[in-house]
Length: 231
Ligand SMILES: Nc1nc2c(ncn2[C@@H]2O[C@H](COP(=O)(O)OP(=O)(O)O)[C@@H](O)[C@H]2O)c(=O)[nH]1
Ligand SMILES: [Mg+2]
Image (cartoon, rainbow, N blue to C red):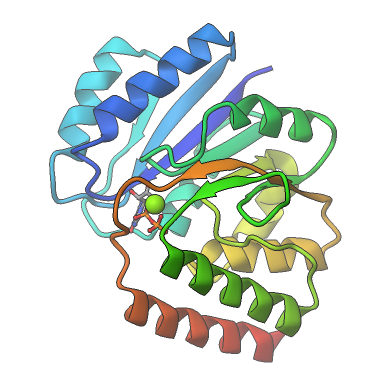
C-alpha cells in the first residue's frame, strides 16, 4: 500500500527545506511508504529552486511546477488527479499539524472512511493559535453548521485525508479553487453520503498567517452565500 502526501506551497522558500527534511525523516522512521508531492501555486520566491534541490536527495519527491498563480484548492486537486495512490493526505507546508497525527489519519482511511478531517475543535485536540484566529474560525464553523446543517466542526484545517477513488468524481464539482475549496468539498461530500471522520489533532501555528483577514472573510462570505443559494 502506497500513499500520497500533498503539500500545497506558495512562497515557502524560507521553510520548505526544513519541513521536507522533517517529514521525510518521520516517514522513514515510521516505515511509512509514501510519495510526497509539492504542488506549487506559482511561487515568486525560491520555493521551486529549493524543492528541486530536495528532489535530488529524495527520489520519491514529486514537484508540480506552475508559472501562474494557482489557488490552494486547485493545486491539491491537480496533485490528487496526478497521484496513483489509494490514500491521499494533504498538509500545510509549515507543518502546523504534529506529524504524530499522520499514522492516525492513515488508519482512518484504512478503516474505510472516505474523508478524514483533522480538527482543532475536537475535545481531543491540542491547539496553539492566535486568539483572533480561534475566534474567527469558531464563528465560521458555526455559520457553516447553521447554514448547511452539518455537524462537522473544523472545515478549514490544513490536514485532510481522502480515499482517492471516492473523492475523484467530486473534484470537478468543486467550484472554488482557493481556500474555500476545503469547505465546499466537505459540504458536497456530505451531501453525496460519503463517510467522513473528524478527529482531534495537535496543532501549533508558529508563524503569522499570510492571509488578510478582512479580504479573506469577505471573499469567504461571498462563496458561502453563493453556495447556499445553489444547494
Ligand atoms: N498552491 C498554493 N498553495 C498555497 C496558496 N496560498 C497558500 N498556500 C499554501 O497553503 C498552506 C496554508 O497556507 P497558510 O498561509 O499557512 O494559511 P493559514 O494557515 O490558513 O493562514 C501553506 O502550505 C501555503 O504555502 C496558493 O495560492 N497556492
Ligand atoms: Mg498556516
